[in-house]
Image: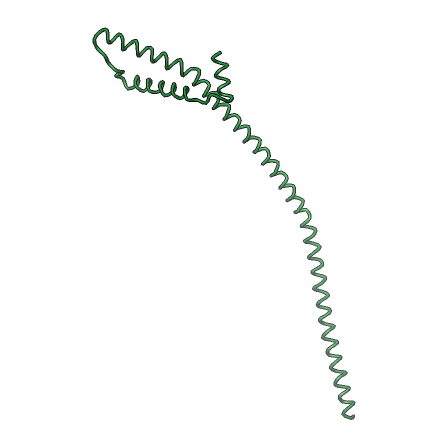
Length: 158
């Protein structure tokens, strides 16, 4: 065998080994690609229903939030109505009660003056009641004169 033939044989053996190694690599690569394809299809099969359920959950949460918004608006309306009603009742009943209390206090003061003894309310409850009635009268006198509450007051007073 000559040197050229030996070199040709070595190149042929080298190419045979190289092709064999490449064939092994390609076989393993094809297995990996098959497994990846199976994995992707399994993930797709499971992900689509999960995404559908997530969309349904988001829609349900949105509906619940809309209901909560409606409830909050109703509670705010009820609170505003209760506030207007309490102010109207305080203005309607508070003024006459303060006037009656002031009148009775004036009568007691006049009677005490005629008897020669002038006294202030001595009981703490009487003092607190008189102070509360005076505060209610001041609040009623300083209440806004426009808006729904003022119209209700005017309608009640005649």
